[in-house]
Length: 359
Ligand SMILES: *Cc1c(COP(=O)(O)O)cnc(C)c1O
Picture 1: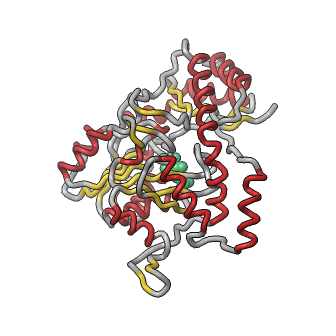
Picture 2: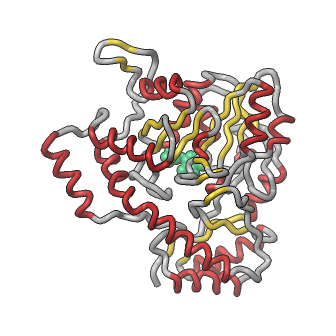
Picture 3: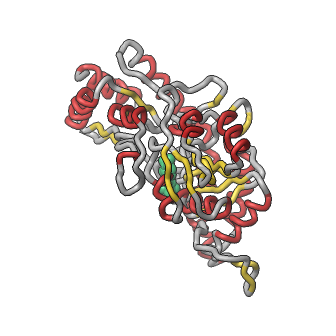
């Protein structure tokens, strides 16, 4: 039986990539703001309707750069329902993590809980648009304004998503995309930092390149977060297909929706004022026991969904000591079913029938 994983990377036509390889072989321009990186940045700005965008070697470094550029050190309020990178970078940068709980409907950070956790040491809110859903942007921005906090959105799941008709990446002080191989749009490894002010944008561009200001001068401390020409070439090869890929994800999502309609499974609510990119297909079970039973039945049939996101990061003692009952409850009961453009209808049907018969 063919193994079905939670995701499978889409590979653009090899011939398309070879054209870029031939150019690199000729010019020997492998990295350092080469033509592919420059072109990818221009094309992404156009596609995503954003003004300031800097590609980086991965989203984790992008998050680190934006924390550095915006606050340096301080206390940061974030969500425990996320991939670990969005929290661990806060600690890695010498800042303190405070977890706010999530909303049971969207599974994004709850503004009420953010407000409860603000102290005089709080410097920023790091919110995550989980599964390409949208945080309560207006509420978060109002809290930030009132308390003079910076807002960073981890938008690793949000490539191409719009919020009330505008790119969701145009909110907060900075948003970070991930182009990891498992994401909707991929450059093998990679990401981008999108910032609202030109000043922050310029800082990011220096900081990702050792702080260089020309060959012999420096702007300040930096690190190596550059994207290579090979990675940028992958992005350029993905772009012509991205609309088709999102459309395929949509039709698979709709098939899952139909087949799972009469089950007791709950799903996060995606508000109708956002356009989705169908990055994940999360389902929430009644209990962890039920989840484990279904996982086992699926695994026995070579189907491997993933527990995104488990455990809740608030339970990791090395990160923080906050309790977040809603996030902890949801993360025990949620899995993401396989979802990728090349997943076949009959595979979706097989996944669902196995799932339903083991509920
Ligand atoms: C994938 C992911 C990251 C990390 O992205 P990389 O590009 O692999 O560094 C960060 N946050 C979230 C929510 C993610 O899903």
